[in-house]
Length: 147
Image (cartoon, rainbow, N blue to C red; front, side):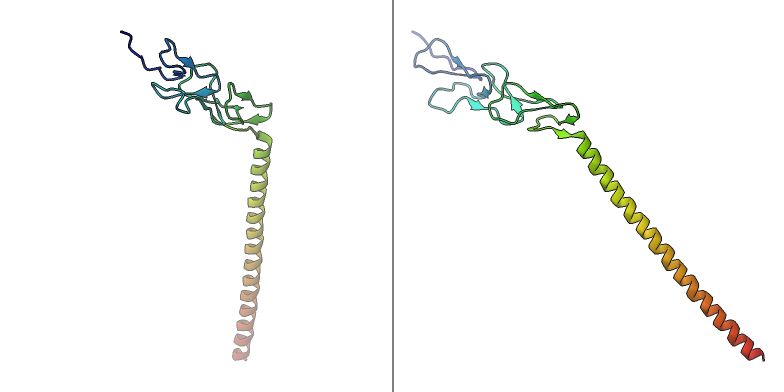
């Protein structure tokens, strides 16, 4: 009497009574035990992940400075010089663009600070002018009272 054995993760049983399980192809995975062809067993790895070998039970995230922008990836693509990515990325971004954005942002902040300083100086100058005029008016009134 023969017993059926459930196929392990990363594989599926494609024939009744088969003595071996079939491995899911690279770029796909199966995290179910005892999967058969009646299930959608071998699923594509999502973008940002990959399964390098046949029979994978899960997909791995692409490491930093690599990416995978398609479903069913078997490897990750290395970012070009001057570009970078985080773990599990679907694309690389330019280091230069991020630096340019930062510098532009800081230039904007600097412009705001300069504007506020100029505005403050202008307000202070106007206040001093008003105080000076008030002092001159008081002196004149004092002189008139003294005479």
